[in-house]
Image: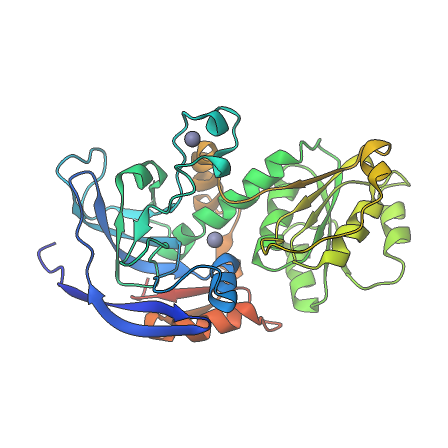
Length: 356
Ligand SMILES: [Zn+2]
Ligand SMILES: [Zn+2]
């Protein structure tokens, strides 16, 4: 505890595609805050987007899928101890405003603030040795059981975002859902939907990912570019059409395809279209007459935190299968590049500071 250094290594975003390993001060904490020594941090597509497109001004320290050990604790903090192994959420809603009362946590003004930082404008800070967790993010702390790894803990936030989206689909057991894209997020969709008794039709272009989709429970795993996809889906659903489709890759044409494949009153959920500016022609009668809904889901839901922890730590969702590439902190930029341009064998990329 007393061995907390004054300075630490951190990967600082200095401009578009410019990540630098620098020495920065270890954050100081207030009486209602905690300091966490970061063990691992996942590389998330939303960070990649900010790094590649420069959508927020530098300097910042990114990384928000963070797990580590509490090393210092403010005098007014209750229920947490130095030495606790924890996973963090960098956005936490107030649970009391108009948006929160509607369950629209990601639209809550407090949620829009980032409450975890390693310095500079708060941006998650997981690509550093220590992070400061602000008071309003303490409810987002999840304790990691002794038998589980920090890597599993770091998946709490991404799994939460997927479970939140699954809940928005309002499916029944026996329904059929197309999940377009079997990257780490698509595979988590496949697994969570399967656990709900939903038949998943998984598509991707990489055979290795399709194999894993089958292992994660997909009823069918098909190359996304097969010509007879509509016929195959008609057969798989006995002509009924899909109850829903999840677009887990940011390809606009897939939204049109998904809309054509869902049944009347079915839902198309956009999960990867986080970059502003994309537009699609839409036959509005598809919405008005066919009652098809285009919905979105973004970020996490604090009310399902415990359920997510149970799913991960019991390994009913075995996230260990998804973590394929681990980089030391100094090589964060290489990890971001790999996550942005995945290979046939790479899925979730993580940055680590210790042998967890
Ligand atoms: Zn993320
Ligand atoms: Zn709120």
